[in-house]
Length: 499
Image 1 (cartoon, rainbow, N blue to C red):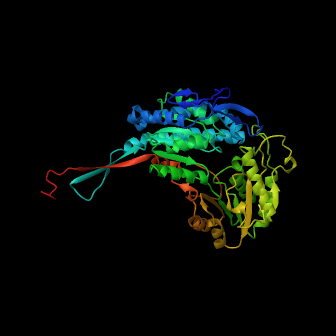
Image 2 (image 1 turned 135 degrees about the vertical axis):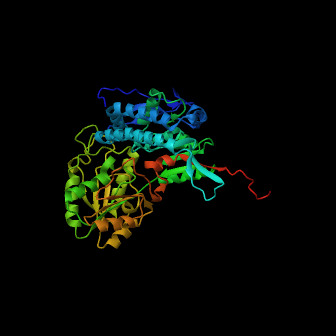
Image 3 (image 1 turned 120 degrees about the horizontal axis):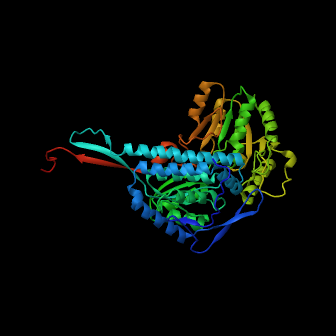
């Protein structure tokens, strides 16, 4: 990690190994959410640019990239990891300016970006050993084996809360598998994705293997999904967009992975260390300024513990510093846009109008005092009911809703009563209860006595409207592979069916 690296200012589209202007000459402003100032302008691609990028990706896939081994691809992934590590602080700062998350969080994201490259480099190497894997058959006249082939050209569409990291969750396993990629970042936060394009060029990744086309969803994202030469679509974002992508992909029966929304519960039965539990609760809902699909924003507390826990949680929440995300003393930065800010504030207002109580607000002395920036101070709401919108709908902001329960069955029922099933957290010193409740929760991820830790080695994904498929871990690689069975007749005799 080097402190004095200066990143290039990238404004165009990265297609076929070159920086090119958009065909229709469209550009967008990138806004710093902390200052509301224009950081720079970037190209905004359209269907014409998407077509050029997909054609480049197809040529690369059918050309030299298609002949690479896992070991070959691992070398490129490790080289890209090294570049990210070298530029870690600079890329973290750029990410903060682009999306508003505190600098320490953004730098941590870049550590994870490099780690994701490294992890899938290792799996790419192991993939070589999996090729022509023998399969035992019940008939001595035949042998069976498996090969694992790349899916083809991948359209990867990523959100604005983890711009670089969400890109890596798709790009790294796709490249490890031998696919080529057209990456469409969020138009709100394209800067780190463009840097990934430059890193690809710097390490000599063959032209067309990774293409980065920024643009609006209808103008770039939709054409990418619909393009006939895209074999697989990987998307992280909202349920409505995910539903539209699934419908569009169904036209060509192409493979789709969807990591969508969440409204995750955190259940607290007891607490041996109140401060530790409260910190995990806050981390689970306020990390990344509350803009996390897996945020454990529905807090269920046993009625006997609730008074003391809510009191301590409120004290700790009020101490959070909301401010300039580049300031190391800030715990929480702005939301990504004015539209998101207004949406989250409307949820809080609706809850209070419906009878909820504002138990705590972070940095109450500075609330409403920001001269500019899309700030929303984290809040803790009590007196919440299951019918309230703040309890049922994904907010994507630092809003924690609290309810109490009397029995384990009630807690599990309330936790599972959601159209989502991405994640959940359980807090208790009772190990048997921990195992029992974890088994009963309808979620793809369950954290025990913590919330939000994420490791590339473990699968990520959920149930119900939280999406389909899994990212990360070996499952993340398999999502970009197609298994091919090879059956060989080895007997030196006629089959004997017709002759």
